[in-house]
Length: 155
Image (cartoon, rainbow, N blue to C red):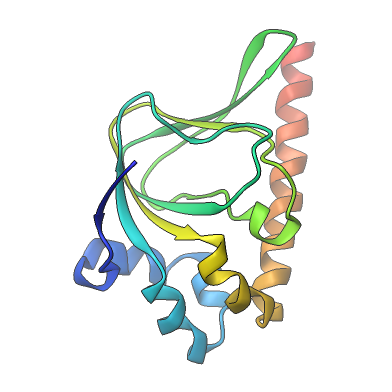
């Protein structure tokens, strides 16, 4: 990961992506600017991991450009759960659950992403009940989808 800039507001594409993200829209108006100021733009090389399964989460990402593969491994077999691109939010579930990562996320291309460190935004999410509920709902939907995908690969 190479930090490109800490000024998310200076990039119109990033501003658009953040302002349309579910996390941002669920925040109270007074917390949106503070949240925005905590993000930074980073570059990731093809093949680089944004997230490794079973690690303790400390960041979440909004993809600005490029593609990533979300996958897990079971019995030595790689199971692709999703291919994500511009606008996708990745890793925000650990912000609420405090659980270890449940999948790997690896760059299929060079990737630019808006990155938020949990330590910088945790207090913002904690005081926004609507944002917490939204994240929990998102986690539940993803978990259901992941289980279905893994089971279909085992058949």
